Structures are given as C-alpha cells and as structure tokens.
Image (tube, rainbow, N blue to C red; front, side):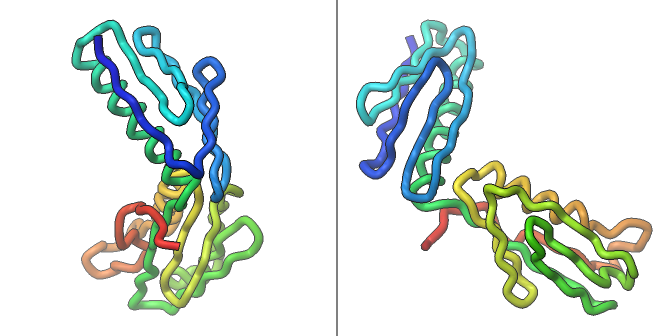
Length: 178
C-alpha cells in the first residue's frame, strides 16, 4: 500500500469535498478536482493523506504528481507565483501597454496592426521598461499566460537568426519574494 502525506502551513486553510480540494490563504483561494479510481485522498486537520492500494509505477507517479500540485497550490495562496518576460527588439521600436485585461504590443516588426493578448483575470501584469512581470496564486495560469504572450509575438516568415525580436521568458515560474 502506497501512502504519502502533505502538511499545510499554518496560514493555509484546506477543505476536501469528495475529490475537490479547496485551499485558502492570504494571497487568494484555489480549487482543484482530484480523481482517480485507484487513489484516494483524505484531510485530517492540517494534513492531507494520499493513499493507494495498488503499488505500480503509474499509481506512484499519480501520488507524486498530486502531492506536487497540492504543494504548488499551498505556495500560491501563501506567497504567490511570478514569471518574468523580456521584450527584445533590434529593428523597430516596440511599445507595450496594459489596457484593462489585455496586453497591447504596438509596432512589432514594423506592423501597423496592434497585437492584443488577453490576460486571465486571476493574473496580474506589470510592465516596467522592457520587462513584463506576471504574478498570481495559480502557477498554471501564470505560466500559461507567459506562454500565450510568447506565442502571440513569435516571429514568422522571417529568418530567426536575423530577426530575433520577441518577448521571451527570462526564468522559470518561481515563488514570489514579496
């Protein structure tokens, strides 16, 4: 029988309803559905126990993944997640604007049309010079927003060795220091 436990920090409140785990902390609230026929979860005070009667590699991998996701959720609601991106251009001066829930990229590769990137409501965006900082409680949403920004300004139909313009991640999604 495989068994793993995760202990939540003091400032985190967790509740488990069926397979739905809710984690609440100073930076927000996150919910996630966990379901697998061979793996069970139970909450005992500040500890969550993940158990399985099966001891194969797949079940062991699922237990490890669930434990990592619960740790991400816990860190997200206590400290938050941050991802940094940098705007690089050499041919045309590019402007970045944050208007409501969209990031506007103007004059990218000399294009007249603006590139509009919709930002998730659970994520905050900060632009300072040529650096973009994305922060939020949900690690997946922060990382997905950074990936979406990178994709929207990817260079196409130009030689990448010459036109290296774009917005690139300058580090992993990490726990906020704030």
